[in-house]
Length: 431
Image (tube, rainbow, N blue to C red; front, side):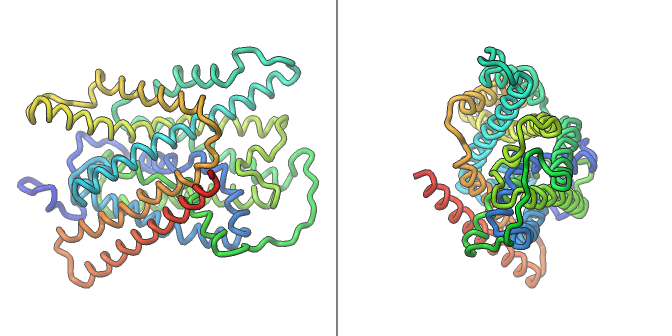
């Protein structure tokens, strides 16, 4: 509304955005696909770690309350602050110091997620080459993961990552969501049909060894459901930016995501039980044609989510570019970081760095817990801080304000606990 400052925006008003055109259905698919990533492969193992279906479901349902709450809070915070990026919202509401911490966590987390995605894609390509050339004593040079992953990055991932707006990803997100659904359906079907060579043996029901083992699955859930980094950008790209509408989009997306994750986790765990692998696809025979198709489609799913992660990481780099130009040339300098001459070098740099790390760094499976721990900042801690700071600028009754402040504090405390527990556990495993 004209004449208002960003800090005085109401709950249902829109933050400044240039021609938002994203439909509600497109927002649901992008938000859903942002969450449906490599974490899908880890959920059966998480059910095993939690001690079975019952404890895992309990942890998942408790987490779902905070996950949906965090998304709604971020939409509200974006409407109050008038910012259109996650880090911009945090910096605008919580101050420059917290904003800088958010940017540092943001760029590190997204960079490592991109590397993990490329490693997953590379592993699926390697298994596919082994299936296509099973009798070759010496694999040809063009089947080497370093060549296939580099070629895929140049021909597919880089073009998908080039567009200026995130709304373009609604088309690839639909394809990626269908691929993730196929993987879930294959795991369900394999439970009833039985994987090739699997001998089912009756095993006693597993129970959690301690509450620590139950809490240890929180990082896996955070890693699997983390779509909050994209929440502000998606919200600001929507045509209808009322808070109630955004809440409906958030609930539908995470309920659909929860259904896919839960089915994968339950049936994958029940199929292999104590023999389940951290990567559920590694538990199945390598020569099963249905599983090979699942591998290919899951690689497609990861390829479609990588550009969303890159878009978010590039937004942080664009913020650095804008501030640098203003400091050097003054506030009136033309510093549009989204123009092609700036955007493409940033995109190429991001793809090159993550590709190099994916090809030459050792196995990243040991630090998945750390990635999940860092994501607790974006799911719990920063949304909680934004809620506490945002309601101070809103004309809200004292009783409602007190309840919201308490919820913000609880969210921060839960996120701090998850980050501390997962980081300590992952560090002990590394050393």
